[in-house]
Amino acid sequence: MRYPIGNADEQEKNFVRRKLIEFNAQHTPEHLKSRYEEINLTVKDENGEILGGLLAVLSWNWIEVNILWVDAAFRHSGIGTQLLQEIERLAKEKGCTFIKLNTFSFQAPAFYLKNGYVQYAVLENAPEGASHYFFKKDVG
Image 1: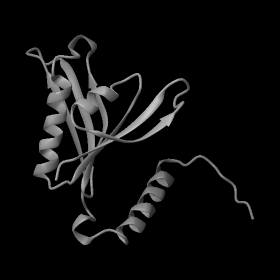
Image 2: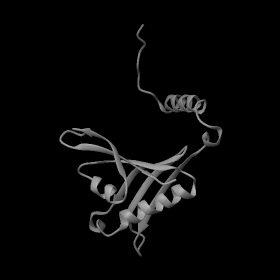
Image 3: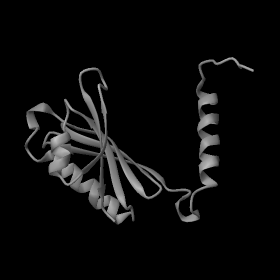
């Protein structure tokens, strides 16, 4: 039997998320079950202008970096490395064992390699004409 599919509203979206979290909790060690925290960092100049930032989530025993951005005028100035070093410090402080992140071929795969991240997967032609790289770094 096929059932109708529709767009989820906010309440339905939260219901689906909650149900997956409940399922995952059945398969997660007790000490990790409630480990979830957003970690959002910025680097600002003396005028309070944001030069770069890193948006991440601590989940269970790792941190996932979702976004790392540095203003084009400040790339190659060390800001990106500074942000990575801070998230790595926080990961160790919070007892995480690794950090994972992804980037595209037109972004910064070489930057992550230079900073000790190891590529564990790549999707070719995603988006068309580019590659999507996945990296991990052990910190524990």
